[in-house]
Image 1: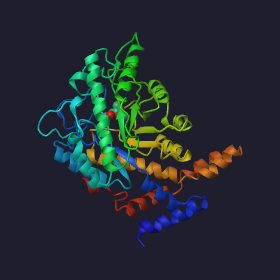
Image 2: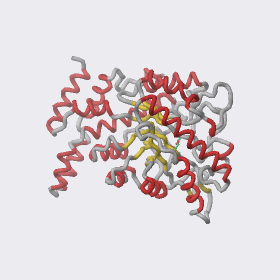
Image 3: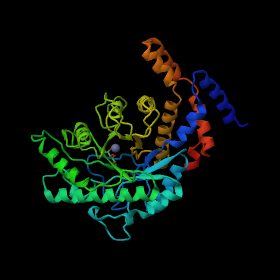
Image 4: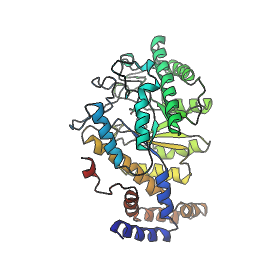
Length: 408
Ligand code: RNT
Ligand code: ZN
């Protein structure tokens, strides 16, 4: 018996004493998909016009030389990163990661064929796909208004982009036999003091209604709308705020909300918000990110809030309703390692949650035994979950703590 296996047996024994079945946790961990965003590999440059800088109030900083310079390099680096993320995965794409067959294809003209190579890739890798329309880094988004622009021609262009992206998502869903989340995030907002906060929201409602007009089979694609507090250069007013999208989704019912962990006030946490959607049976899309002091999109690590989010999903038994995706981009360290690290941290947090003795803690709470609730929540933190993680990696043929050498 190898060391990992021996260690796992010890951990299994320890967890059994608190009523947790580690084999069952490992089984579940292997089944819950994590949707890994593709854009950490090249700082969101994409294949459309890779030399165009980012716009829309987002920014990738750092000058580590590892940024992919061609599509081939991008694919090779992505494959390396995925090779060290154990368990079931999806890949989240952006519309700018297209094959244009040597001729510029504008955003309002993209079709499934431009993304067929991703279906082949997904099949080869045994993964699912998610999608994101790209409503930024484009001439028609220069003033930071897209779906809620006062200019009808600009709105029409982006509405058409949104519609095209739904069709591409539907195509992914049908081809791969699993739902493709089509996540819309728009930068729309103002840098400074805003007078009419209503009008842009009216226009956004109109645009969203138009995008979602065609009925598409929900087993192929589901649309999510990602809220935000502010963007760089757009600090004063964001059209697509959290309240806006929450109300829209509640009333229209044919889309869901995406919560990015970096998109709230620093003391506001996503873990506290989930149950308010789940109580109504709603699905939610997550962008797991790490905002250091603000929405900085640092590489995800196993921090307290990440654990809390996963614990919350586990406690509500909502892994079928909360779609977990990642979103971070850091150009200051090796991109492949960064991509893999964040995804591995999400899986670790998931395992941590699956190993919580939730029944026991809930019982203390129901009995009003609040001191035991606190003490055993605290004791749970130092149970040997790392040994179970190593076992998961080994079972999946992926390195444990020494994975970096595999990707460099
Ligand atoms: C921006 C949003 C959005 C983007 C990606 C690239 O603040 O978080 O999700 O990061 O779509
Ligand atoms: Zn996001």
